[in-house]
Structure formats: C-alpha cells, structure tokens
Image 1 (cartoon, rainbow, N blue to C red):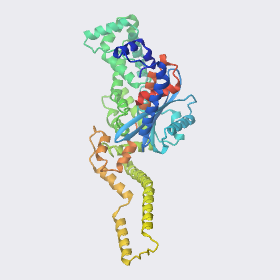
Image 2 (image 1 turned 180 degrees about the horizontal axis):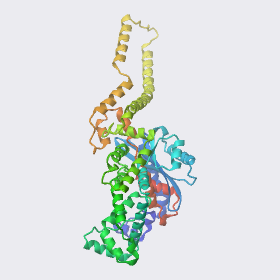
Image 3 (image 1 turned 180 degrees about the vertical axis):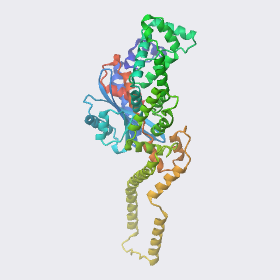
Image 4 (image 1 turned 120 degrees about the vertical axis):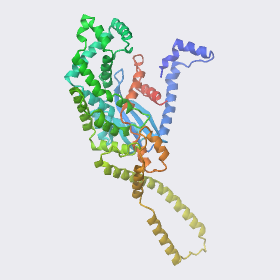
Length: 505
C-alpha cells in the first residue's frame, strides 16, 4: 500500500494526465479524511459478516513497537468456512500501558468483545512464550498453544551456546564485515567467483532474531571458502580472519546438525493450509530421524542434536498442550492415531466422544424449544378449530392405548443413544484408510462430510488452529512498511486502519 502522499507526486500526476487528461486526481485531504475511513468501514463490515456466525475460531496475538517506539498489540482470527481455511487481521491496537499480564488480559478480552466474539467459541490462542502473555491467557482461563517456530528458534539458540560455535561465528561476522565495507574486496570476490566457477552469491551476515541467518552465513562461507581465503590472505589486516581447520570442522558440524531443520519453521508458519496437526508428526520425525545421533556425527553435532531434542521434548510434555495436539492429529485424515501415544489413545478417543456429545446436546437443545413451540401452537390451534360449542370429547378405545404403548417401545428400542452413535461414527472414521500425506485435509473432509457429519464438527474445531504466531508477526511486518521514517507522524488510529486494509482488502 503506497502512502497517500503519492497523489501529489509530480510523476504520478503526469502519469494520470497521460492515462486520461480529463481525470482529476482527488486531493490528499480527500484520501486522508474520507476515502480511507470509508474503505475501512466497508471492509470492517465485510469481515464482521464473515465472522459473526463462526462456530469455532482460533486466534494469535503479539506485542510490537513501531519505528517511533509506539507500542501496539495485534489480534488475528482463523476459522474454517465451507472447508476453506480463512484468516483475518482484526486489530492492531495502540497499547501505551505497562505490558503486564493483567493489562494484556484485559486488552485481549476487550478486543474480542469489540468484534462480538464469544470467548467460549475460541478454541485456542497461539502466542510466543513471553511471561506476560502466558500470564494474561492464564488470567483469562484461555487455552494457549506455544508457537512452534519460537520454540524451535530457542532450542537451536540453546544448542549453539558452545564456546567453539561462539568463536567461529565471531570470526565469520568479522569476515563478512570485511567484505561488506570494502568495494574492492567485493569486486575481487566477483572476479574469483567467475574464475573458480563458483555461484555468484553475496555473503550473508547473522541476524540475532533469525536462527536461519546464522546457518545461511555458515553455508555461504563454506560455499565461497576458496575465493574468500585467497582475498583475505592478500591483505595483511585480514589474514587473521582466514578460517582454519578447527573453524571448518565447527562449521561443517553446525551445518550437519541444523541443516535438516531449516525449512520446518517456514512450513509450519503458513496461514493458507492446516498446520497444527503437523506438530506431533514433526516432533516424531525429529526424534526418530533428523535429531537422532548417528555414528558418523562429530561430538559437536551430536551434542547440538541432543540439546535441541531434549529442549523440545521438555516443552511439549505439558498435558494440556499434548492433548490439544493429539486432538488435532486425530481429526486429520492423514494422521489420525498414528502419532498419538498408545497410553493416551483411549483417553483422547473418550475426550472426542465427550466433546461431540456436549456439542450436539447443546445444538439439539437450541433447536428443540423452537420446534416444540411451533408444534404446541399448531396443536392448540387444531384443538380450538375442532372443538365446537356442542362438540363432545371422543373416548379412547383400549386398542389405541395398546397401539401407543407398542409404538413408543419400538421407537426407543430401535434408536441408539447419542453417545453410542458418536462412538460408532468415530470408530468408522478411524477404520477408513489414512489419506495421502500430500492431500489437503480440508479437501478430504469436504468430500467425506456426509459420511461423518459428527466427527467433521471436531475437524472444524481443531484444524483452524495455527501452529505458530507468524500471522501476528506478518501484521507487524506490514506495520513496519507503513510506519516508515517518512511517515513517522501517523496517528495510532490511522496506523490501525491502514494495517487492517493492507491485510484484509
């Protein structure tokens, strides 16, 4: 989304004159006072209509400071409609108070109420592991799912806290800096890449907030090691930065330990496909394959793998989190009970039956009053119509009593209880062969909704949960593109509107 000042740019005005000389570009004031407010109102009404009848939804939230150091709190919503995963950015609210758990809890509750969303319909909120956010959700008694990407990042950072890795990374940072601030070294690197037939890639530096950048820096240095060494050796000031055998061994060990984990954070951070049910399979894959110590692993590689695995195992052994992920896996037709611990299997199936029984009972109770009311009204009207001033009440025969008794007994014997019907449907669902691992689970449910109408409600409930808080992070990335150095005086209300339009239009 371009700044509204663009309408006064001379180049833009000349462009519009060329496109249509008769067209008069509206003024900056018109866009600022009318157009944006009107677009926001229309878009908000559209989003409101989409979410007002949602039965189950999940959310993500996070805190952020803009370039002008103004604090904001975001809220995104995720739900399934017509077996399509939908998401929307609801708000980026200005939050200038202390970021304590109590105030965050109150702010999140106000955001839900402002959109008319019921807390009991929110299945889960995915957040990072900040102590204030954890406390806020505990105070609101909301179910919380820890961000998988954040946990993986912390696990990898913990594994990299080794003197050997720290020393090597420090040398590599200085090495990359030597090329970043010298155009001669950059020119020489490009020349040697051509001579040595190396990929024409630039060097990458480490960013503290992204573990992948550290791995990318190490891999790029290993890729360009011959050219880099020749350039650094030619300069007396940079000869000390040439990587020795010890540094090369450390770099190769880090790449071997962390390389297979590179794509999992991005894969689990998507918003347009189901991600929560992948958590248990990914943890199983880490344990059995990717983080399993091999005989050819170096001591450093083995230590890093064990550190990451132990950290993730410890953080995901919480019973509530484990049950939530098991329920999501159960209703994913690709996995079902494949990755559920055998000791917990009976408990998870009992929970599924219990939740469906409660859900369907509430639904029937909501429908029965209206049906019984209309039935009683029609019966009373019929009785009044048949009852005249001289109409005598018809006497019931003995046969009519017997007929009623037999009919009611046969009906009760033929119809199973709700719990039995749910249990039978769940067993039938589990007996069907698992779907292909590449298949979209929502597409499978769209095709089999009629076969398992009750279990499909659990799928709508759990498969909408995002595995990471990346949707809120993307909101802040959008906010960073809006609140720039040239637009640092935007008011918080305008920031909220612009972010909302950028994410939802």
